[in-house]
Structures are given as C-alpha cells and as structure tokens.
Length: 321
Image (cartoon, rainbow, N blue to C red; front, side, top):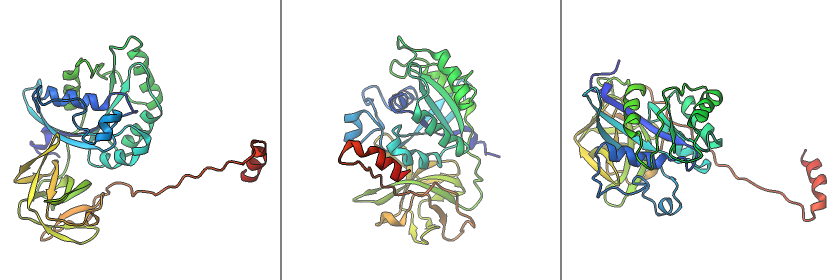
C-alpha cells in the first residue's frame, strides 16, 4: 500500500509517434503548473540539445518535477519524463518506462494511430504501465477525434472514452489532462521503510561533479552522506548531493524517498560504474534483490546487398531465399 505522501505522487512519461505533439504537451504541462514563468518558457523546453531544437524532435529523454494543485484540493507531485518518438531512439523510450508507473499516449487527431504509436504503446503495456490516451491537435481542420478515439479502442484495446481532446499548441483542455493524470495514473507502491533500491534509468557526466545518476527510488530512502553501492559492479560511493529535476537545471534536496524521481551525485568518475538498469543500494543495509531494470542494448548492424546489374535481382533473390 502506498503511503499518504506517495498517494500524491505520479511518475509518468509521454509516448507517441514522432511529431504528434509530445514535447508541446510537456511544455503546456510545465506552463500550466507554474513551474516556469511566461518569460522563462520557450518551445521544447525539455529538449536541450542543439539538434533537437533544430530538427524539432526529441532524442534524449528528459525528466522534470512538477507541483500541481488538483480540483480535489490536494497538492500532487508529478514526475514527467518526455521521450523520443522516432524509432531510432527506441531504447531511450524503453529505459524511461522502467522509471514510470504510468504513460500518456498522445495521438494526432488528424493522422490517427501510426507505426511508432503502436511500437511505443506496446512497450508501455509490456512494462505493465497504466496508459492514458490523449487526442491532440483537435483544432486542425482535418481533425477527426471521434474516429481516432475508435481507432485507439479497436487497434490497441485501450478504453478511450475518457481520453482528453486537446490542442497542446493552442493550450486547449490542458487542465483536463492534469486532472486525468491525477485520477487515472497510479501512485508508486514502494515501501519507504524497506532497504534502499533505486533504479538507474539514465546518467550524465559533469566536469565538476562527476557522473550524475538519474534514479527512481523504488523502495527505502537515500540521504546526504549515505554510503551507496551499485549492485552490478559492487562499487561504493558517498552521496555528496541529491535533488530533483527542473528544466535545464537541478534542485538539490536532503533526501529522496520511495516514489521519488531524482538524481544522485557521489563523485563518480567513470560512467561505466553506473550502468543504466543497475540498482543502487545502501552499503550498510543492503537490499537482497536487484530491480528488474531495463533491457540491455543490442548492437545491430544493417547491411544491404545490391547486384551491379539490375537484371540480376531474380538470381540474388533466389540465392538468399
């Protein structure tokens, strides 16, 4: 059973086919919850790579912590992770899902369900996440929200009767999305009193701080000064900084508890010591079992064969067949 604190936490990601409006919806959620002022806001606020802004796509998953006062009067913590939509960055999506309890599936009201829509939503379903469908771009002249709603039910098998109809670009019905997140996506379930188990879902190297480990605290707690150990490598480190994610920045804190998504700094010099999918535990109170984590990367090389003379295609096909 989640604690009273955990009941007001939602850890979720946004998945979709490329260009269906994931990052724009993330922008609107950040804006609506008041995390940034209108002056601080910019398009694709979570996309901080130059090529992401240049091409208008998300390559690297980014996390951010939001605070939202719902219509029920309660203050909720929303840990949002924006994910890539392009098939080439599929692994970014899969490892992000391991740090979430729910997912928002964004579908374009004009284009409907496309290939990567299915690929990403099946990743979420396989990860046992609760999926909330959201139909975006209802302001387009070619939008067919009712048709898309039926597509979601027929092709994916999700109940789309309560799916919010929105326009992220024009800020239409964003409040309804926030309310549906609070109502339909589940809170984390981890035991705050159990030994620490935190899943590493990403990391980045900082010249001054060393490796900054991005974690979802599944059980227990980690505090400043704790001695932590990586289950896979057995390496031990002292926690020198903890915190939460803000757009393009970090917000330090004194502890991370079960259900929190945040970062750990421990003067780690080698990224190899913090493998994605590894479990962080306390050295003096070790957990017995590692978290399942995410799938290992499979290195794949694609190779094409073409005959010099096009007339030889039938022979090549027969040879390969």
